[in-house]
Image 1: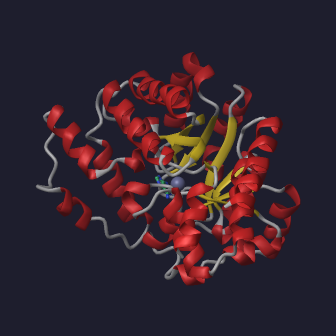
Image 2 (image 1 turned 180 degrees about the vertical axis):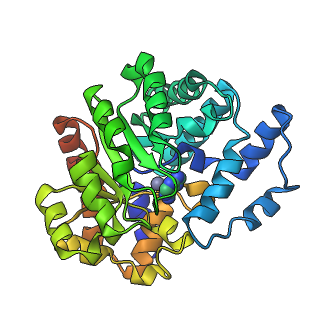
Length: 337
Ligand code: ADE
Ligand code: ZN
């Protein structure tokens, strides 16, 4: 296993499903809360970590949004993002495509540009200092109205050049993709690429509508596609990327045991699956832990790990040349490892 650990460590990786607010480690939360004179209802890092026990997505989201309330200034968002980038740099992550949730902050009075610029400056510095390239995705919250998503789209327009795509996250069940049909259409018109969470807790029908109504370029999670053979066929035929998050699925009880994680079945079916961390500060693992815990649980071979790693670059929004370069580099490193 030590061998697999160092193999995973050495491979250059791309992360495509990461909520920046989900990287807020309790240690940093205490530092920023103190600076902002913000009272948090915990007295120690250990107490915070002990509270991270979730039975479903909503239980997690309630705590995740409460944690995000601590973030107020551009410097806060910069430090949050910088902490994530330095962490994944140490895991040999070379490219990231990250989500931020503007409404989580604008709804409590923090300006859109404060959030965006703090994150963006850290990403720029990460590219310069750490060599990590990036794309940025603003995610609409599905538990609130489409009108609010439209307001977010309007707020983003002066900064269009800094944002690559839109996503759809938060409470899935009861908030189907069709609720956001118009704002996704308008976002595409503005040149944004499209992705959406789907089939995490919600049914396979939500994945169909994410494809047919929202017209997504990439599907976040997508686990429940396996309940519908025709849907799997469609996803395979389109080579629609799925950004899977094994430790998230385990912690949110989407699956009961990593040993039953249907990753090999998905790969054998021909799905373009990638591994990611989702909200690593809450789910106990960044990229390498997601790879390693999954590899241990279902006995992934080195070849399968290489395929998953190359899929991360293939499913990214890098140029065709950059994808080729990184996939070749993964092969080269794997051969030498
Ligand atoms: N926001 C942050 N993490 C999420 C997840 N796993 N599902 C939906 N919304 C989220
Ligand atoms: Zn997610």
